[in-house]
Length: 274
Image (cartoon, rainbow, N blue to C red):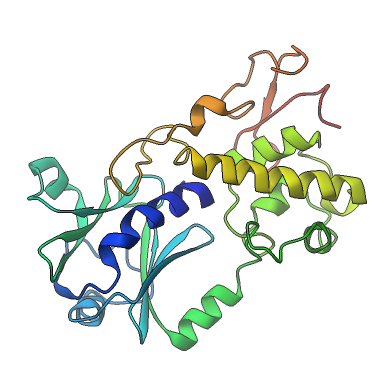
């Protein structure tokens, strides 16, 4: 699933084309991506609306339409692209949401397996939604102390906690693996047991790795594409994720892998992480 760097890349790519644009026509091919909104209400809510802002919250791309916000979570196979040409037959086949803009371009949410979600929220709904999500790790106000306070609330494995969106926004499996390796922390260690120096290292590595991934336009393992349809390149810089059984690039120890922590693959070095 696209994580913070991937969604941030998408948002930065599509924002210039969307700001100030009016949505003239809307079509939706499938209802199964909708959450808490009907097809009719979504189409009516988008048609005629002007895009005031485009931003990211956690793993979601958000279009501020004034009284409402369109919230898009791309899921594993979703993408958001603004096209200035006719769609190809393949693009039309998997185009779930198509929004024609007043300048002739078209915003398309494409989702091959339809694993993403679309929400249309009014202001109270948005406030409830964003209020249930934890702090943004790249915000200036996010400090080691704030991270420590979140970790102290749970005895679960630290990897599971930093991936839980109510504790920390936007971090998923790829960047949790990478940040914990870079910080030298065992991903199975109870979150509340971390020391102050662990908090400082983990805080620094989460931010460093997320910023580096944004600079590389995200990580494309399989389906992720940027807002211009290109692949990311941070997969070339991954030190542990996807490298189970390969030698650690720090010490040469064979990297271990387990699904026991949170059901997803956790790759780590027995020697470098404690």
